[in-house]
Length: 108
Image (cartoon, rainbow, N blue to C red):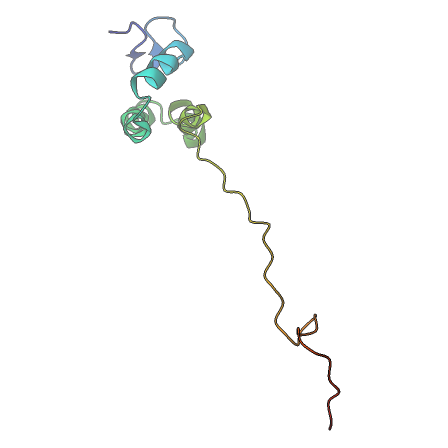
């Protein structure tokens, strides 16, 4: 069991007195939930709800970053960006490029 648990209602760390979750607890949580990022988000989301009730003067964005925002910083939790395709679509015949085939004169 960790000594870096939250001290409520002030939400400081019981092990180092930093705001909870402290850097040590974040490392522990990353290791504990390495293969379960959704479970980590749900776990911390429950704490976020409690913290908003205990600290209603704290802006929601600040609490969100503190409890959940840091989870996106790890390599296994960051979504992979999709690359855009560089393939080109062939032009329709009769548009910007002449259609392939023998050149013939057209009569009106």
